[in-house]
Image 1: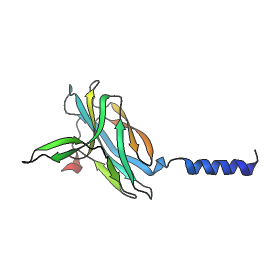
Image 2 (image 1 turned 90 degrees about the vertical axis):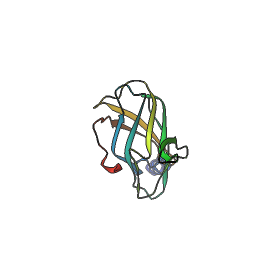
Image 3 (image 1 turned 120 degrees about the horizontal axis):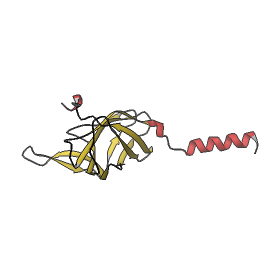
Image 4 (image 1 turned 180 degrees about the vertical axis):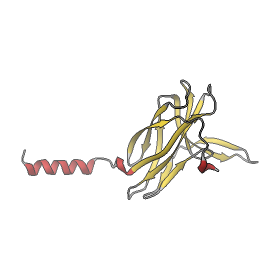
Length: 149
């Protein structure tokens, strides 16, 4: 193979590879309400440094029987209810989307074990354009979420 052919192949491959670097995960943490809880959640800032809008469409983790994208909706009379968001969350180009307590979040249902303070949780976030992004999220049971108030 000539150098010219090799460079052409490398250039073609780089154009075909998804731009995973366009999505950054910042300030992530996970928690459960209590030691023997059957559910937990993860919160983070998802930053899109790219020039195209993207969408978080799913999440998976081996710590739970089911992992979904959730939000809180007003069920009426001021009662908030958690609901699965099948369409996911838009992440605008050059912008961010916050997953925070009391709002959008990654929900772990049917925890297979305790979420202990100081442990970490492996979560794979699935994006329409960026593909799968796997992150290690620290478990922080003491954290008070400044951004949700």
